[in-house]
Each structure stands twice: as C-alpha cells, then as structure tokens.
Length: 314
Image (cartoon, rainbow, N blue to C red; front, side, top):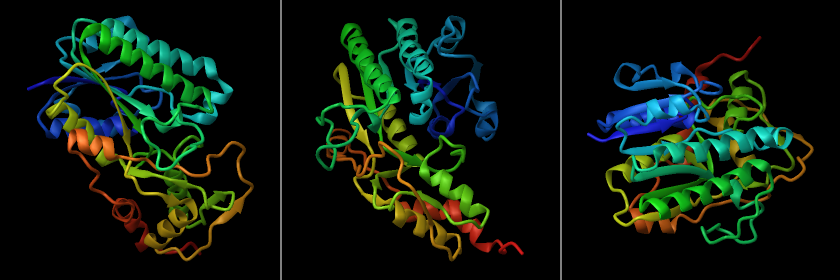
C-alpha cells in the first residue's frame, strides 16, 4: 500500500481526492491548516486517514506530514483571482513560498508529485481549444503564482530525477464547493437556486467555460498514482472535459434541473472576464489513457434534483 500525502486535503477538491484514494486502499496523510478546508468534508474517512493540522509554511508540520510518504498530491493553495488582486503578497507567500518549502522538505524522500495548477496560467486564450503549448499569459497574481509553482516543480523533478505531474485545472464543480464570493459559478448559481431565486449572470452569458466534475478530478489523480509515468521529469496536462458551455446555458440547465421556472438576472460584465475557455484534453487522454466520465447534466443532476422537490416560498 502506497503512503500518500494530500496537502489541502480538507478542501473542496482535496476531500474528494482523499475519499477516492482511501477507496483505492492508499494509506493517506492529510495536511491542512483549515483556513478554507473543513474537517466535516473528511467525515466519511476521518478514522482511516492520518490528519496533520498545519500549514505548508510550517516546517514542523511538513516534516510530520511527509514521514514515510512515497508520493505527494499538492493541492494546498489560495485560489481566488479576485482575492489575489487585493492581496498578492498572500498569494505569493502561500502558493509560491509554500510550494518551495514543501519541495525542499520532500527532497530525497519522494519520487512522485502531483501539482494542481490552473487554466489561469493561460490568461485570455488566443486559440481554442487551449493546448498545453499555448503561451502562458496570466492576468492575475493567482495565475502568476501558478506559473511560478509549475517552474518550481519542473526544476525539482529535473534535479531529483523524480516525476512531477502538473495538472492545469479548468472549472471544477461538485459537492462541497462553497457558495462564497470566491467560489465557482456553479456554486454561486446553486446558492441562488437553493433559495428559489434566479441565478445572476455578469454580462450577456455568452462567455464559455469547460466544467469538469470534481469526482473526475479525483479519478484522474488516483489513476496517476496507480499508473505513474515511468520516466522522470515534469509532465503538464490540461484537466478539463474538452466541452465548451455557455454560462447562460448553464444557468438555464441548473434552474430546470431544480424545477425552477425563472430567467437569469443579468448584471454588467466584469472587467477582465475571459470570453471563451475550453481545454484540449488530447494529450492527457493519449499519454495516460484517462478521460472524464461525468458529463455536465449528469454531474449537475446530483446537486440539483433534491431541490426540484422543494415547495416554492409563500
């Protein structure tokens, strides 16, 4: 049984990854400072994992979490574009310095590391679908920190003759995604629809995104651990579905699945909003044999069908 560390394992994506790895009978260690993660996200597996409370900036916590570990899934990060604009120093401290400290502590201890990067490294695309060879033109401090994180990973893999799998995540959605101001659009729509209110769209809604279910994200990470690349070095993959969805169509689909007959509310477009985004996933499919299994209607149905039985408010 392989012992695996998941940083940020109590978060939205991390908790699903942990559940999947436990299901696959991995020995899982979770490192989380609970700044955004929640212990209840791990309720189903809490008695089958090792939980280390601490930050990736904490040398003691890192050393404890990495004890006897063979692989690391590095998910711990600050992830809000908007927040990064207001507090870029926080993002460089956690996302860049935290990653550097993790790799320094992991030197000589592990030979496989999976790093969650972001489609934010591409900025506004100049070609669609977006391939891994697309120029990196991040539009925010968050995107910049992910570019730097990738470079740190590549250097670490090269110097340690290890494997780093870098995943450029597009728009993940699913259970446990919080409806706070920094959450994804699916969570924001869900929060409104759960209160029988129309979803709010910024702009005309014709902007597009590539939505991938969090369970598909977890399945890919488990797949990489079970069938890791055989040669050392860094490998970079887009993590999406290859399907482009308009935001207005997403809003209408979610309302329909919840049994809510409303039209979305439109507000002024937000400055700097990317117009279109969709991943090319040919590389990950060819090189790993993995492909997503959950299409958008199926993934949303599990979130929204319970709401379709609710009575409208009086």
